[in-house]
Length: 59
Image 1 (spheres, rainbow, N blue to C red):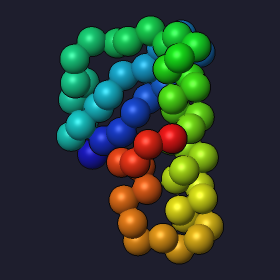
Image 2 (image 1 turned 90 degrees about the horizontal axis):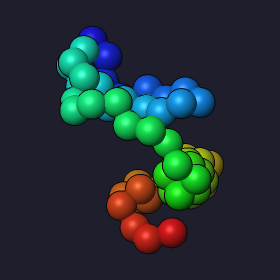
Image 3 (image 1 turned 45 degrees about the horizontal axis):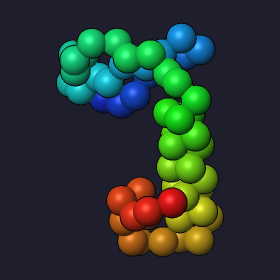
Image 4 (image 1 turned 60 degrees about the vertical axis):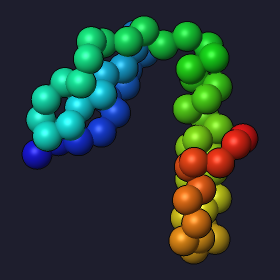
């Protein structure tokens, strides 16, 4: 079973339980900035052993 965000240089798709959720979306620079910020917060939370909901807060 696949669930997650599938991304490449052209865009991304959301997948849940092996099914596409909505249509393929194109990536714009603001989207990349947001994904970079989320990834950085996630990595900080993992490194610090945080149990808080690190991905739900502001940048």
